[in-house]
Length: 166
Image (cartoon, rainbow, N blue to C red; front, side):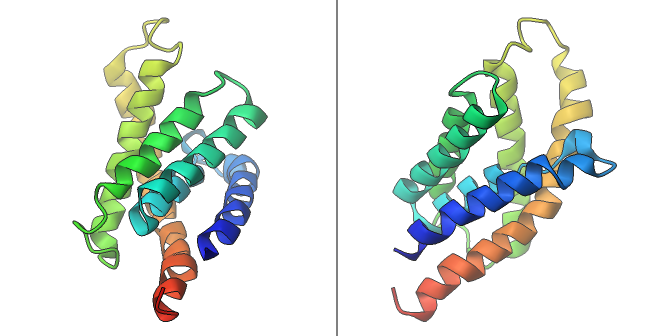
């Protein structure tokens, strides 16, 4: 129940940080995808249903407010939230170095999915160039900042529910 109150606030704060603070940093071109980390964390920490719901909310907000293809981020965030739930119970949620690598790979998969579903494929952008110049830097940046957000979510949501025996 606690996640239903915390995740909307986290989504809004992350969206604001992602579109303001992180877009002004020197590496802004490869800004971290905080909404992806939130969808990942919801599925990984709380399960498939919560991952899908949080992924939908985060993606829908991004689709509506940033324009582009309506549904593109909604679908990709839902897949991230649902997909990360498949790792629940297979990777210790407290194994932060491994979770960091998983966030890296989920970001790469997400970037590839967005690339394939967007108009970039139509314009024949070289996939190798896209991977080297966009996907990898974004994945590294998301991994580094994302683990901090994962830790925050872990202690706010999952840690609090464990502490209360829920």
